[in-house]
Image 1: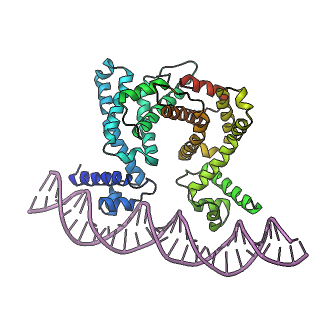
Image 2 (image 1 turned 90 degrees about the vertical axis):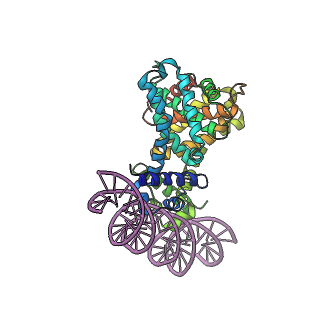
Image 3 (image 1 turned 180 degrees about the vertical axis):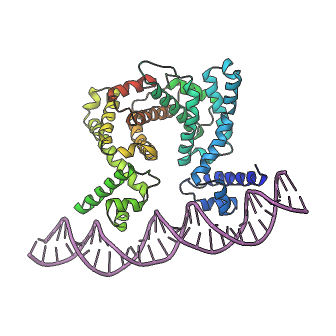
Length: 180
Length: 180
DNA sequence: TTTGTTACCGAACATCTTGTTCTGTATCTA
DNA sequence: TAGATACAGAACAAGATGTTCGGTAACAAA
């Protein structure tokens, strides 16, 4: 990837996240991003088709970092072999907290909802192998509840209760959800 | 309220819900609604400030129906006295299923998310009196999880699993959530 | 039935946002 | 050094938004 492309892409991401702390996502226009990043309109559209695609790309960048060790450990069979599923949950929370420092605006407001929607897509892969089949409860329903409960945990935690540790949050989650 | 106002308001609601089954909420413009309802632009803005306000008003109309018996029974102290909390949950599901017949488009897609967000506001009032204090788990966290789990149940149910009865769905919910 | 009020129509309007296209310039890579 | 390409900057059409206005029809109260 061209150095100029990386620079511009980074400028757009920085401007976008900076704006998110002052302005809501829907109220934000492409023009706002251009002004904040100080780039030309045609340049923006050379990188992203729409504002939504920009948000999606930013989320994907984050998730690939958060879940990278997850994926790696799955491949190498050394992390998942020696840790419980509960440890993996805690592990993901650690990474999310770490990321939150740099992109605070992304986690709250209407933008936070979209973020959590994308997050759920990754979570399904993680939970699928753990949620057991159950005669009484439909499996895909149990999956939805587990994923939603985790996402809700992240939201509650990063929205004003960051003083709890990832371990504590995992305990709280397990205290509410009986299918984990 | 003037008969003409009721008529126009109803026309707008009908056009809006009809459009939702063909078009996504964000893609839908005010102009689309005007064309579908066959009313003037100034008339629309005399009723609703924005498209978002229209959606909110529609949701409020629905919730006041769904939760009306809830409120009434609270006032008369005859429903809540003779039924369990689990019955109330089932009761709400019955009303939601009933409403779904007429406004299908409202429950799915991006619009469904906004609908569920508003629904949660009402659910908090219902759950607040039931979720017990717990030394280990923060009360507002337990509330968030319970409400989110219920909302997720509604989503899963009305989105392709309507063959289950409200009683069955309540059982499934109770099978996943240990704090109810 | 009459009278005053009010909701609606429809047309026009300025304003803003979007997404595309163009030319010239600067920067990268081979 | 030479060719490719990313960016700047400006201009553009198309469409959506929200407001304003005068005329018409429907309402409610006398």
